[in-house]
Length: 417
Ligand code: NIG
Ligand code: FE
Image 1 (tube, rainbow, N blue to C red):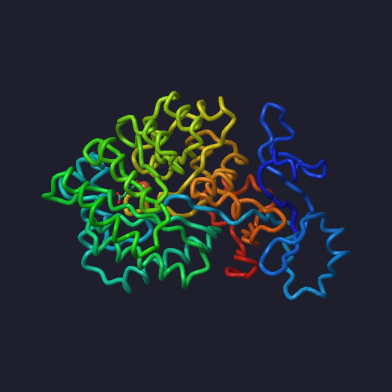
Image 2 (image 1 turned 180 degrees about the horizontal axis):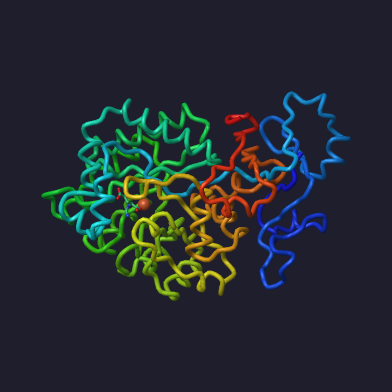
């Protein structure tokens, strides 16, 4: 029973009935992007969505006294559980001093070149046990779940050697087994170049040592590379991702965060699932990605922390495509609440609240190849729901210092109340 039930894209033929109103229906200059049903209810059976309709109709057909659990969401807003398509949530150590160093004028790349940044987290992770890494990750996942995230991608990449990369992936796997959030694991041995190692030699070791071990361990689904000046070149990135593909890992890329090396052409030629950051991408680069059906992922939390230079929406609007939005939660971007990412998508990038919600639900599901199962609410979908204590979905990005999430359901189970 909800004041507003947001089920997903407005252009989905199956759900775009006249009972529903689109986002921005009061303003004809804004394209409808969401299905919003007022005074609606949802019936869950066996952990999946069995029916969605008006509250009146469903409470007649499924009397609440027959239900195992009945949740009264009147006056509230129910959304699909949020899908975070890009995190580096498994890490150890503390880099809060780098937050201060950046405020004093040091750049992210300078810190990394001096052996700080990712390389510092690598040191801390090498010293941590798999149990410690798992425990820290579980604490962070609890906070993410309480803020409405029900599916999250997590990357390794703070090991930079075979043993530690496998340790990170094991921690991800253990957390996945113990925690309600569904985790999608990405191997990112090519996250930085370890100190004192030559970039080409390290690339070879990722291809010849790390990838075979990661394939054997069998936890990772994606392979990601930080394709950036001073990190991995386009050619090195290609070698790693092609080798990953041969080992069953789907390519993803960090591109154009600081410098544009031409990573969008690489992402397109590899049919990567996503290309992420895109701060320095040209409109033509975005066109190349969209043409090749690579899901663009924008990470406004990182842009916010790096000084507030946000990407333009124009190339996306031109093609009528909404980019996915991720948190990029990592020691350089200590922000994991998807409601906050949605606020930054609105205020920083200029997305409408409806677009931002699509960015953190069905669009982000596309970035991790989960469009079939999560990010929308359709009959047969797993009942992953965020029940928000707000009268309308617009209040999610609008109330930017609140966690408006009241309860959370995962596969129909109430996991946050
Ligand atoms: O996506 N840019 C590369 N990787 C992360 C940052 C990781 C870190 O600084 O620890 C990112 O922003
Ligand atoms: Fe990242």
